[in-house]
Each structure stands twice: as C-alpha cells, then as structure tokens.
Length: 632
Image (cartoon, rainbow, N blue to C red; front, top):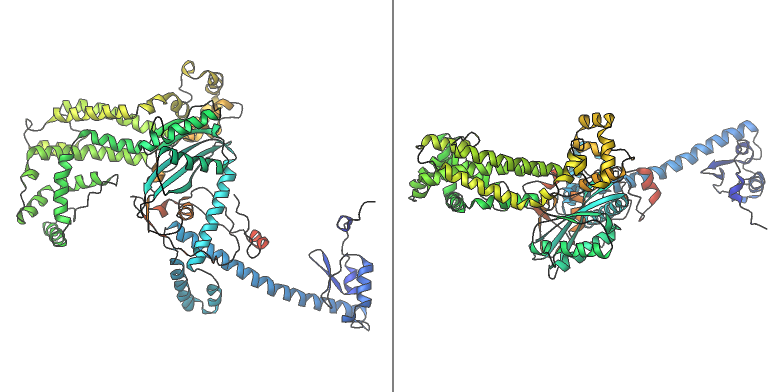
C-alpha cells in the first residue's frame, strides 16, 4: 500500500476557523493566534483538538461571544503582522547593506583601485550622512567595506561572471581567441586570453577569458597548455574554434612549436575539418609598417631636443614661460613614449609647429641647433609628420572593442589605395594631402624639396603593407560575403554556399533590409532557411582582427600581490548583465591587496558597461553564506 502524501491532498484554510478556533493561515500553514504554534496538517480536527486541549491558552476565549471573538482575532492578527514586519524590515536592511557592499566593490574593481579604497569610501559616506541624514547613520555603518570584504566581493563577482560566460558559451556556434603575453613588475609573465563568440542568434560576445601567470618558461608548449586549459574549462569544442589572433611573438606564431602550430595540431587530433585562421594583430602590423620608412634619424634628433627641454625642471619651466611670452598656440611639448601608439605623431606635429621657438630656446641655452635648422632635416620632419598623422588616423579607426574583422580589412584596403594615390601625387609634386610638406615647400625652393625621395618612401611603405597584410588578402572572399553578400559573384563563392547565396540575392525583402540596417547588422536577419550562410557569417563575425583588448588591459602589478584575474574580469567585462548580488559574510580570509596601473592610452573604466542589478527576491532566497543566483 502506497504511503499517504498529505501535501497532495490540497487542503485549504477555511475563513470560519479564525473565529471558531483562533487560527490564521501564514505561508500555507495554520498558526494559532493565541500561542503562535502551528499544526502539522491543516484539517479541522487538528485545529479543534489544539484549541480545546492546549494548556497555553485554555479558557482564554471561553466566555466570548462571536462578535468579541472576531474582534479578538483581528487584534491578534494585527499583532502578528507587526512582529513579522519587524523581522522583515531588519532582514531587508541587512540585504540592502550587502547589496551596497557589492556595488561599491564593483566600482572599485572597474576603476582598478586598491581594495583599501572601500574603507575610504565608507568614511566619506558616513561624513555625508552625518550632514544630510544623521538619523540614517546606522544603515551606512552596516555596509561592510573593509579591504577583506571588497576583495571577497570581487572574487565572488569574478566567479559568477565566469559562470555566466560558461553558460553563454554553450550556445556558441563559432568562437575565436586572442592571446597576448607581457611581464609585470615582479618579472612574472602574464598570459591574457580573450574570447569572441557568436551564438545561434548571431549575437556577439566579446569577453576577457582568463589571466594566467607564467612562473616558468613561456615557450609555445607552455602557452598552449594554458590556452587549452581555458578552452576545456569553458567546455568549448575545438571544432568550433575559427581563429586565433596573437601579438606576433615567436612563441605565439612559430610554425613548428608555437602556440598557433600546437593548436592546429590539437584540432587535427580532434578530427576537426575546418582550418584555424591565425592573424598577427592588425594594429601591431600597422605600427611595424611605419618602421619601413627608416627615418629613425629624424626622431632621434627630435627626441634629443624634447628631452633637453623636458628632462630638467628648470629648462621646462623656462621653456613654458618663453612660449607664454611669444603667445604661441601651444604652451608645452609632450614627451615621446614608444609604447604609446599615437605618441610619435603628436610629438612630431607639436615640434613642427614650434620648430622656430625650440631652436631659439636651445640657442639661448648655448646648444647647437645646426641639425634642427638643416633644410633636409626640416623636409624629412615635415614628411614624417604628415605620414605619421595618416597612420595615426588609420590606427584610431582600427581601435575599439567589438570591431568586425571585415570592417578592419576595408580600412586597411582603403589605406593601401591611398598610398598608391599619394605616391603618384608626390611624384607630380602635388602635396594636397601633406600639409606640413606643403608648408615646407613654400618656405624652400622647389629644387630643394625632395619629392621623388618621399615618393620612393611611400612606395616602400605600400610594399610593406602588401607583404604584412597578405593573410588578409587571402581571406578577401570570406570578408566580402559578410560585407556585401548581394554583390558577391556566385560562381566564385564556395560550392556549399552557392545555392543559398542565389536565394539570398533574389530575395527583395532581404535586400531592402540590408540597405536599411547596413552590413554590420544584416547578418542577424539572415533566415534559418539559409543555414550555411548563417554559419559562414558567424565564423567571420567571431574573428578577432587585433589584440586591442589585450593592449588596453596591460598593467603593472605590485610584487607579492594577490591573483589579478578576478579584478581584471570585473573591470573589463562588457556584456554580462543582469547580475543579482549574493548575500554573504564579510569575506574574511582574503588578506592580500591589489592595485592595477594601466599603461594604455585608454582608461579602462571608460569602456566598461557591466551592470549589477540586484534581484531582491533572489537575495532573500539565499540566506547568509548562500549566494543568490547571478543570471542573464
């Protein structure tokens, strides 16, 4: 005989039981209003027996008529509700304090500040509270923002963001990786790994995946083991890996034992039919192309002049005062920093504009300015200033997260076309696109300005662009399928795409949609009836064109600090939203502090769009020490 299940009998509380037996219903249970006890099974016999036999309230309502009993019931219910409200208020205030602690910890992580900033923030809040709302001071005091607490909060947020990314990765139909390795101030190599995945709806997820310290060697095998571990932890199949973008180091790109070669070997072992597409970062290659001009002698002269002015405080102050007396447009000179992409162009432009003032100041200090006043040098500086300005403009176009590789290819292709035009115009002494050169030509005689020499430089630069971006040209047809599917020649397209491509090009509705939303958004509107085109679009959208994300999250960590991974995950995450904050303790046990110093031109905090929105019902369901769920 099956065991009786009381829960399945659907017993309900009847309103008349309140007056007859002094009971009320609280969260599905019958609770005695006189003594506060509850009965196991909600049926009339149990309520009547409790009312008649309980010694705690025997004869308390014996002489009451029905009207008096009803009044007593209402009075007791009001008392019960007030007691419940007292506990509920205390619980909600505690949850609000925990939520506030997570919000502050998130802001500390996003701004890459030390964890001890939490205590400073709390002191500021208490000072403001004392002035604005002194009666609320205890609520602010309950917000725990000690160093240990902030560290624990960051760890919890980081862990949950990883879980969200793992869950999101289950829907990826294609993904690519970007990897870069640098060394921190304690001489520990740090491997940064980013992932860019495309899900079944062709939505793009571009996220920081992991920061792995490399305490020993950094060979291709070492890098491969760390990347492989990250992929396995994410639960991603190797068959969906489309591309790998690196910083171009030999350990990354080695044909036999580099990271790229070992991942390709792993994919062959996994019987993956697709070929891994590996790229050297587009922005790095663009920067390397500029070195083909071989004009370091010009920069060395300028750098010596800038360092003479800026290196000594007295010279720097006197130079700024000198510029103020002359009422020049610019009031100072910037330093040239090789690790900053745009630094050279800014220094060149400023030195060109202040050339005469620099020479006068250095002569007043007894320095020889023969090199600076040399006409050949001045022409070379003008040319280098203009071409660097063009390269910087291209560099800015290639920067940014979420960039589609087909758009980056178009930018590179356009610049190569410009180089051809500039070379032709330079040979004809047409300097329309070289304003600094035009200025120098007007100052000097036409015979002195070396137009032919600079045209040869442009030709060398164009040849270096063609050589370095040959791998981009090899993928030209793939990029065109994404950028302009209606203009692709069907016969030249891959065989498995030809039939679907014809259907797409003959669909007027889709053509209209393409013209309205543009190439970047159109891929999401490709119907499910064209599965091969959707997969092709997903693979192209998933590709990293550069390691920009890695370059903008380089940092210096103080020696002997805690693991930097959680802090970076919280600070650079971009698309994981709707996070509900867990209720927990003050995070004791975390004893180390961390601090990040960003070396990039960009400020990390300006690029983050992570939002932590607490779902209170999830927090209430967690309890102390039980994190609530972080969900999309």
